[in-house]
Amino acid sequence: MASDRVGSPPASPAADHRGRVWEPSQGSHHNRTEIRVGGLGGQGIILCGSIIGKAAAIYSGRHAALIQAFGPEARGSACSAQVIVADEAIGYPYVRHPDILVLLSQDAFVQFSPQLKPDGLVLYENELVQLGGKLPATARSLGIPATRFAEELGRRLVLNIVMAGFFTGATNLLSIDAVEKAVIDSVPKGTESLNLKALMKGYEYGRGLVTPI
Amino acid sequence: MDRDGFPRVARLKDGSSVEISLASAADGPALLDFYRSLSDEDRLVLKDDVTTPGWLARFLAKLASGAATSLVARADGRICGEVTLHRNLHGWSRHVGEIRLSVAADRRGKGLGYSLAAGVVKLAIDLGIEKMVAYLVESQIAARKTFERLGFRKEAELARQVTDLRGAKRDLYVYANDVSHIWAAMEALVGDYSPHEGG
Image (cartoon, rainbow over all chains, first blue to last red; front, side, top):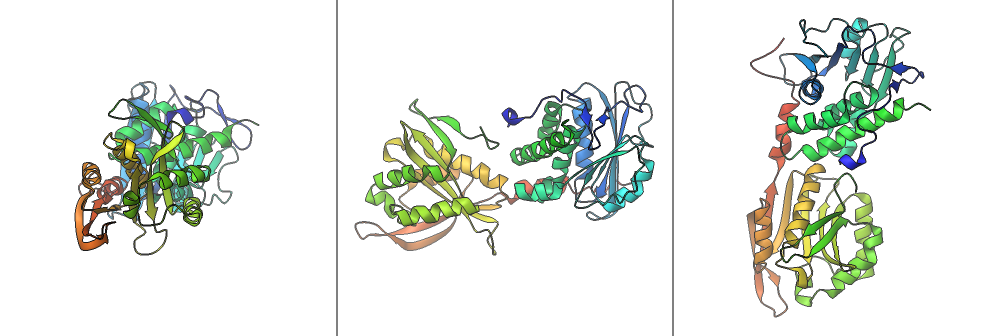
């Protein structure tokens, strides 16, 4: 419920686990933030990217673009979403060097981590993805056991919504209000309540990781 | 207020209001008082003898384990209604939840039963329950209407299954509400697949 929010919208820049601060516009032109969400079919990758884009474009008054890619099978094949959030119109909608990677599978990490900007941020499902020290020294990373959280909430299906909440809490890009509206707008009727719980679970976990000590 | 929106105030048809909250161990003594205040006829249609401390201990253990989720309605400092979702955490019917509903005689006909049942149906969907059932005696006409308003339909009829206080045999109806389609829609949404698109 709205009354349980921890800070809305995020008021202070987020610090990563190494004590540095994440600013969504750093390394980008015109406050353009490039995001790649990667995982497997059936994990709700496209929906996760769509919610981020909707929250930015419809509920935050910014510009957003979404490119989706998925394999021929309904489940298990590689899947990714490219999302761009900007303050100005987006002329080129593809993500070449993401500022933020949201990763839900090891294959996605292997495929997309080389594209990450040197000072980029990796948000990953830490029971599905092992970073293995392959990130640039200047990159930052935050993990969340999103699958376990989703299962504890009652439905593994809401894993992607936990990740959307984690994204919101761990970055300073979108307000939780905007993302909450995007979730309600995106999920089937009757599932809103659990999806919002999943969103807040990820959000609070993300905020907890980046709150300065 | 917790994530499920409880406690919340429900306005009844007669203008009165009750507070509906998630039941906890602290509600145990008040629950016993509530059930002991029900008439013999009312208690006859309950599956358990809910007036004993032994029942309460078993009920609270189920609450603690997650095998039961309960809402209680309070007015004037006492419990005036209770609804529980019972479920098997293991086994072939773990997707099924059984709803049991009780309302104090002086609060009936005012919409309290509907408020409680609607609340627990929403909780059940959030918990991942795909099918809900309620066992209702043929004479429980108001309760049957309440569950029908929530999407339940009579799925089975057990003839002469219940003996009332006067020794008469009554039919027992199994009402059911299959809500699996709600999450099937979500499952389709997270499929990351379209037969018409790709890339």
